[in-house]
Image (spheres, rainbow, N blue to C red):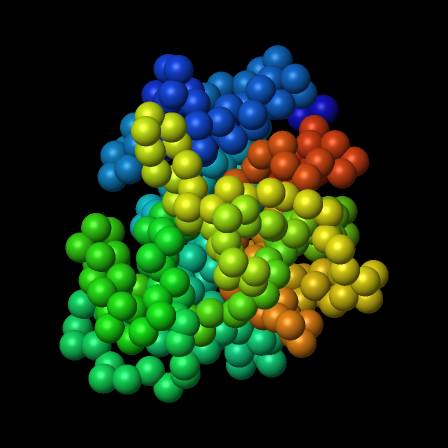
Length: 324
């Protein structure tokens, strides 16, 4: 049990959604975390995270919480600096620090680091607002997504481009909508897996969950997660995602776990993390993305032995880090 006040910092728009009847996506996930915290402690306070405003920090200084459960600014420019502010103030907080968040959120820098360490990543090229390259030195199909935004923001069915002109068109959409460059990946046709990691008492990452994603409605090997859009009054993804236990050998599971731990250490992640992997027909594993402060929900990746136990472990890792 955590003694003292637990401050759960949640984006302001998500707090409003939680307080209304529009609980979907991130709002539903953050509400699940909040309800779990309230089962673990009677002393939990929600603090709204307001971007480019000092109110959030001022509120935390006033409250003097024992720990911050940091669900704020996921993959936004403010995310690393907010973690850095908490560190400067000496307030223990869950998840990675500013360096780890900054590295993981930048899909170009993180991949270059991984590739230099011998970790398999997709071939890629950055597509910015500057004049684009005339060609790409790997064949289609291409997968085009924002260089920094997370939670599948900016990813739709058209993100899988069958030609170079279509890839440029998708990159232009991302720039106009999100004002950030795109990264154009070699698409890894195959199966997708997520590995959940939590630091143990010795400061080492352990795998707490490994799940396979099945994409309903996608061609075999061509499925991927997209952002949620409102269609006919309902919130839907391009492909419905099913989370299933992985149907792979124990040796391949160990390989995935070992790769995930290597990446987490390389990118200086801490507390907890999630790695997105693809496995092609030759069973080669490619790291698609590292998530410094991934969403926490009641999915299979965080439920062994229980979500409550893993959330407590995440908070204990933060308190240990603060004592170092």
